Image (cartoon, rainbow, N blue to C red; front, top):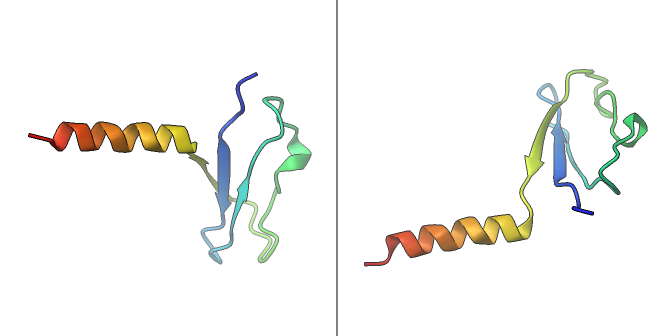
Length: 68
């Protein structure tokens, strides 16, 4: 099984942020909040957080590309 990427949910109204790591590739609606726990805004933004290996691969590619 490939572990799914972590997600960050944020509220554009109050600035609340939280990171969520899914337990499996089968996401259930109950695992993620449906509204901001601080202000109640139902329009949360979500973004995928790259894994450490993806980040290191990108960094190494940038470093190798800049070497003379």
